[in-house]
Length: 502
Image (cartoon, rainbow, N blue to C red; front, side):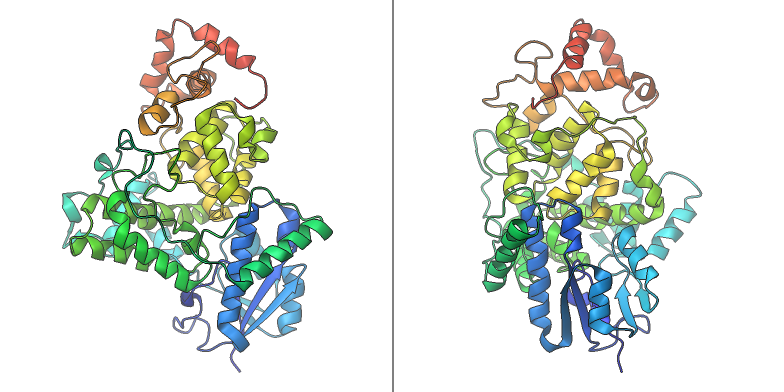
């Protein structure tokens, strides 16, 4: 009899059931899926995220039909016991340390290699070992992945003559426009399963004390393989060409810009990253998209996503406790409650509203508006990581731990990135229209119209001057402190800034 195979809620694509040699799940193996209520009791997730995950799981169960045993239980242990009793079961390597501890603690569960990524753990370990202790730089890793998987390569040379087309992908938004002139992204249609999920979430809140944050409007992200493939096709055919130049730009009236909105589909396992980058490369080779747009998307998927996944496991679980800058401040209520209406600074208010309403923003608002604000204010990086995990539809432990601890909050002291990523209001002003109509001025450091990002930037540099002055990429910025005639006023202002929304 074929051993049953357990699917977690982020292992929903066909590649988690396709045979992969002796170590894969058996052909046509019975499937077990467990909806554990304790997950939602332990943490306060965004309501749209809870809806998406449960909808995707229930849709997958409906597709599998009689092949699946779908159990709704309080815990995974209880659900597995009800599903298979004392029988053996297989499961693909989970995506978090907590889930891995769980499955390894169960005596009759056999853990198979991870799926849903381009690079196997042992391949990454070999690459890292060959560096002989040198830094695991993302750019070097990206080149290696491109070469190993023959992605956007012309023989031994990168397409377009170079691996990185960032120089062409940092354009500010077009002047005088509120929205990019690109077709809108794919939007799924809700069905009876979505209605059932929404009714269950309402009941959990009403009767069981489960609490969520954010709004659960009509579902914006794919919950099925069919929907995810349609979203991928639409992005590649109609939006990818415009993605590259404006991937770092922000517009208040167009939070999606030309981004793919495919991260949640890949992170649920509905799409495999290989098919995403292969379609982007095919579009470049047939002449429908420029190389910089294809490369920008490939770098996000095959470069950054793979890099983050590998570092999560390579650095070990202790990485989550990193706090090199000694930041311990609590997250204020306006942030934890996604209370955009309490915020005066237009950039922060707009981005918090996007998170509140959709559970998503693209990578620049995450890094340079939300993350930069948290870094400048000295908030506890573990709490910031937890917030991003809970409040984003594509947020998982493996996603957010390196992205927030390493990239956003510099809490690892530079193991992952070579400098802290924060800036004054000038960057936001250059790359967006978010300063237009704001009560603050990006050029003002002090006074009633002092931009909280500009003042916060200089206060942050001063607070960590000793550490950052030795960083080659930060040396000039730190030296700029000596040219500020009003530095004392800035520091006094920031020390006495009330702990409320800027």
